[in-house]
Amino acid sequence: MRAAKEVRDDRTVLSIQEDRIDAHNSGELKDLVLKTLEGGAKNVVIDLARVQFIDSSGLGALLSGYKNATLRSSGFALAGLQPRVRSMFELTRLHRVFDIYPSLQLALSA
Amino acid sequence: MGWAVIEMCETFVNLDIVVPSQTRYLRLVGAIAEQLAKELDVQEDTRDTLAFHLNLALTEAVANAIQYSSAAKSTDSVRICFSVDDAYLSVRVFDHGGGFDLAALPSPEFDELRERGRGIFFIRSVMDSVQYHKTDSGNVLEMRKKIA
Picture 1 (cartoon, rainbow over the protein chains, first blue to last red):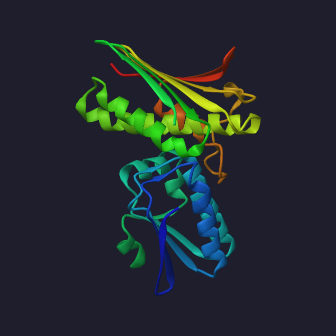
Picture 2: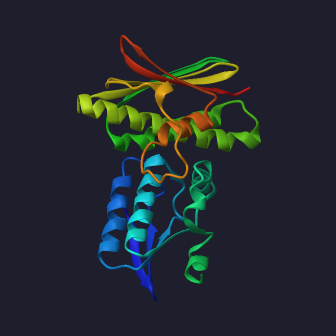
Picture 3: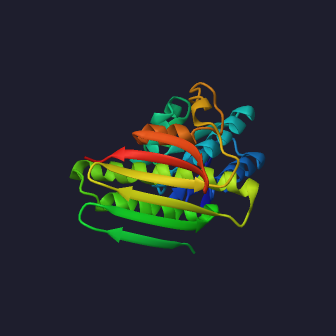
């Protein structure tokens, strides 16, 4: 899982550098988010702008991140969802669960 | 790598693919499904959605087959057969695991935040029919999509 980590003010941004999240790399995404939270990050923003495709295992990895963040009283937001990616959240109604922003910029100014 | 056989005549396409039972091949299988959809004679405005839906259905189905196979035998392969006629695109995905009962699978409870169990839901959402049965050559998940 290629991803860039950057701390901006009180937020930790994980910018996913993959165009596709599926059962081949979703386990790595789950581990990456967990390690970031274990490292003390308090407000995690996942930038998905580069991701063109996500499957059910990728949604599962993000749900794991959301649950772990909530347990640690950390914020957890998603940004920059492409239309195909957004449709996966809508089909499963997970867009009601996650804090979703159209872009990283909007997530950071929220 | 796997092998592929393609037969094309005016209205029929049969495409058989065999890939190792490893998740690194999901990208390839999804890309083949997407490209096949783009070759079909469907309305321009629905082509991209169809391509995405086939990519998704195949990614989920093959990931399931790999998961079942890996429990049985790690050197296994997954066979995928596409066939297209005038009205339907059908895809069969074979696995050699213990199988499951498609009819007994519950729909995901949307209020429960489980990390697994949405794959078949996605396949059902984007395809017109989904069946799973056992054959002499393994279990087969058969998905159909109306294209005309």
